[in-house]
Length: 243
Image 1 (cartoon, rainbow, N blue to C red):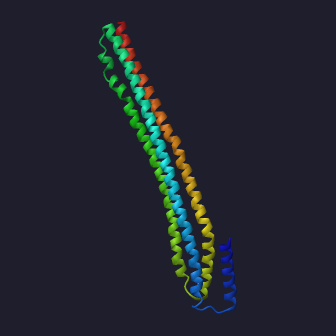
Image 2: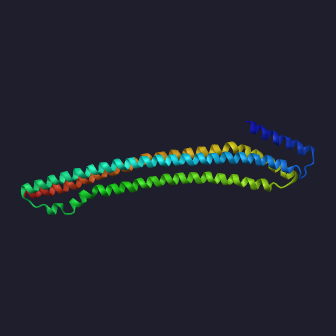
């Protein structure tokens, strides 16, 4: 608030000054110095916002990474339990056929390997799915960070705008206008950065649900496909025992 009042007073004084006095080159350095001081405050505010943005985005990505690792580990454990169950059911069918004295090699051909390998296949699919979601989060974060860096570059360009204001009365008016804009930017730019980053963090957080979906879907598909394969083997074994 004090800074804003200072800028308004600064502009008002120069408005009166240029109306009542001739402006020469000796007046410009002080005006330019005032504008540059304001720019330093803006640069500090934007730099702080950049650091906070980087931290917020890193935290969001790390959280998703950790969640994904835990979900993958849990899903892989479920897949292993499913594999054990498939093998147990398969052993029962083999024992049943052996007790009946029938050869079921043709029942097992292709089906056995497929059955016991299903958990590996679907685990790999799950890992790819999760990896895609993680990459999406990295992309979100990078886009947000690039946008912040662009704002930093725009602030850097103000230095040249100050130089381009020139000399004399034109310089006083130009610098006063820039000072007002810089004053607004001191508040608005960090606020915009914070809002944009918060929106990106929310997007990244939503990826946790998509990671969970990757895992649960692949676990369900693995079990479903395995049950179908077991059913085919069981039907084949049953037909041989009956005949």
